[in-house]
Image (cartoon, rainbow, N blue to C red; front, side, top):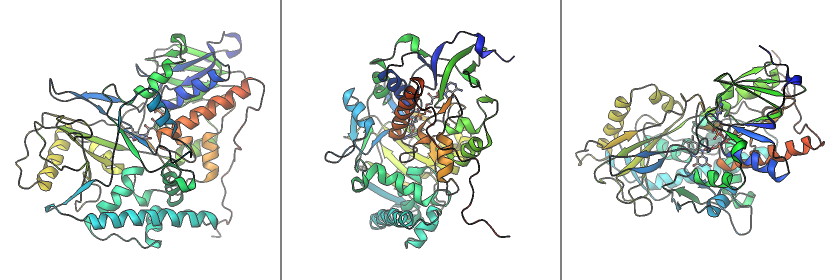
Length: 479
Ligand SMILES: Cc1cc2nc3c(=O)[nH]c(=O)nc-3n(C[C@H](O)[C@H](O)[C@H](O)COP(=O)(O)OP(=O)(O)OC[C@H]3O[C@@H](n4cnc5c(N)ncnc54)[C@H](O)[C@@H]3O)c2cc1C
């Protein structure tokens, strides 16, 4: 039954839908501007969203492993712009360790095979790709796929080793292939994070190994300002009704909440898959924007063994004949991370992640053990003590791991994705122009939404982004 929004008392001025980094920082930003009548509505029983961990390992050998985000990507160079996640990590003493992605041992179908020269060549090819994208932006040329960019800038991988090296530079970051990704947006996504010459933070990657979980950086920050009555846990939103007078949110258990405004911070995967309904349906321009971005999937598959029999470097790379088949390996059983833990994990991305999510655990485990046997032909691979992987794509609270920008997603789509629909505001990592996909993208978007909405509530402008009703071609097709 439709609720008469006008005649009901409001639960709060603002409902912040989702308690990940975006939601927490939006709440903090509202509070900083004097708006304290808000409620964070979160389906899970804790804050953090995709900053999520699990206890993993045999009894007595358990360690905390990160199922979702794991790194502070880029810190700061000189007195340049600092990654705000790094600021929170330092403020709350979250334990992180420098992770050297070039400290790598390479393997292929014959076992250990040193193709690090090729690996570093692929690193240079990636840099050339991003420079080529910059030239396109300067010349106002249309976007193309990452694959087109690689080919036009001279990188044409022909061997499994070259493809695996390319995968490490590209797919392991964007969680999709160069064919599926925007050449231009993937390049600026990289540069604004890692390249201090264009205002990026810098080249470091700090890996969280805090046994309280990486999520501590955001939970501890929330504890500095959030009051118990400003957050509702175990509250899954099923429907959002919006009008000129307010927003009404229905929860799975039948409760409903009323407010003057709401900010949704749900992943674009959630918005794409109708896990939450909107009444009235979102306008066409909004729906096209939501469906035009991609929610990619990045999967870490964890193993614990009784003892370490693998590489001594921080990273390992395996080249299979099939590109993307269990390629990137990381050890936690390393003097820099969690020595003695017996934990090693491998990452898959994109369509390969979707594939393994549909398989039983036993099959994935057998496949990966087979790959380990190929990588280490002279070792009898022991039975693991523990095995686990999260299914991010199937999870109705996320539907993937983070957004990726396809070449058919245009600037106007981006503005439309971010724009509010009346009193319903949209935020989250995917709305970040420069840092889509990253934690720091979520942080900056939460801050932006909180500050702008505070202005609106105080009588300022309530419309920030220009909406484009129809995203059109500047040179229409002549058919
Ligand atoms: C496997 C993986 C690896 C990653 N690695 C990194 C990394 O190393 N570095 C990095 O910078 N970034 C990384 N990321 C990306 C980063 O985690 C995200 O960009 C960021 O956490 C997104 O924050 P958010 O607040 O926008 O969204 P979310 O964290 O998704 O927050 C949205 C919240 O909404 C809740 N929610 C969803 N549906 C409902 C509903 N119907 N009702 C109520 N609540 C709901 C969710 O539970 C969630 O808490 C990774 C992500 C994943 C999954």
